[in-house]
Image (cartoon, rainbow, N blue to C red; front, top):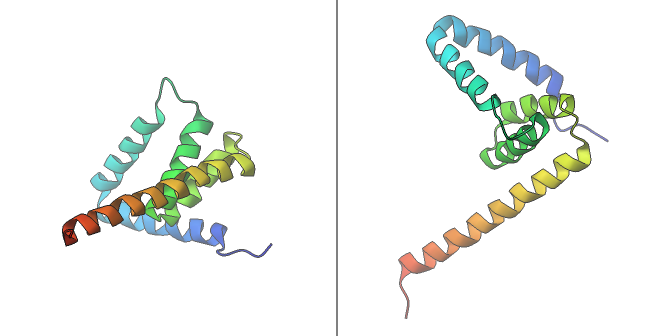
Length: 113
């Protein structure tokens, strides 16, 4: 199977740029990391479920950094490729549903006869 992206190289480059951003605006990075820690501190969802949700959100927001980080975390949490695929299927269906719903908004805005 051919790779679409070299995720290890992407991860290394993103980490370097993250260090640069931290040097330029440490309070921003500190706040972002605090938000991530807060979201990871749950009482009702296990780590694998959180990561599967994160992957579904990552593809709907088109965030490569999120995909990279949460695939790695999902693997550590024990998520299989099959479980990831099912979570991605939910996200794909919701994106299609959102497009369908907004198509109705367009027809509504266009007015009817």
